[in-house]
Image (cartoon, rainbow, N blue to C red; front, side, top):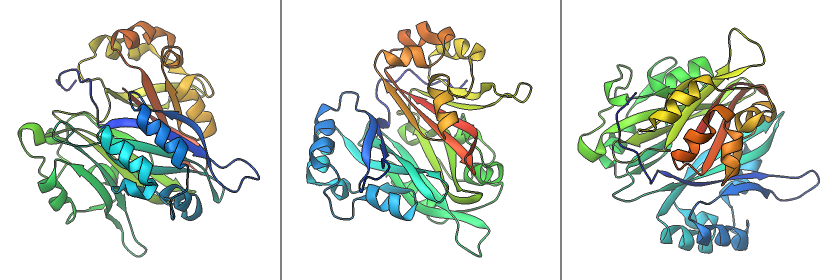
Length: 322
């Protein structure tokens, strides 16, 4: 396990899931978590989707993920409230049902000197058999950002290429020591640690790979896990990878946890092929009885489950806790 100190602040600040109810003309918030971000919650409620060309509306129409670095696109009130709490960017990540977007996950990301990290979108173009950087947010990682714009990944190469090849999520516990991580990760507070990759597939076609990168001074989330179907027991979902940033008791307790589709936060993400959120006391009941006490002792108060689906069938899911 990578030795990093327990963190109280993460790159991930909050999240929303938006859906378009049957017959409705505009999407609505299905669920949201804003731990310590009351002003942002109020601004989102008041601003709604009033902004012209709001990125959420665009995602429902063009089915594409995106990273938004200018939160004025979400509306003036949202941008102002976000700046007050150190939120600098957002990831917009759709889920598909047939030929349409069934829901959109929004991940709000912090920025500033104490929140070094990155979110990247790696996409291909027709006629090209490699991925290039289609969008990115680099907090305190200017040199790394410059290098990334000149890098391409063929299938199977690097974290984006592996996610593309496997059509599944993957964790790299220490990208600085990983042979497949070709980009320089810097030193000191700029040193990158955990790499997390999630592919987004429209039917069987890759739309993009989202890569979330933690730094030595700031993890994307306090806990990052990958869940897959147990190869020896159909219908049983088990953890395949996990990084716990010093929460040793939780890491040990997580070894014995399993879910079935529809059970707990992971099981619901698996059965619906949509991202799921939980905050507050509900976290302890949703993450597996065997680790309830360890989750409470770790001080974790929210969780986000993000499935990876191929033609509507989930093959892996990411769990982020903070």
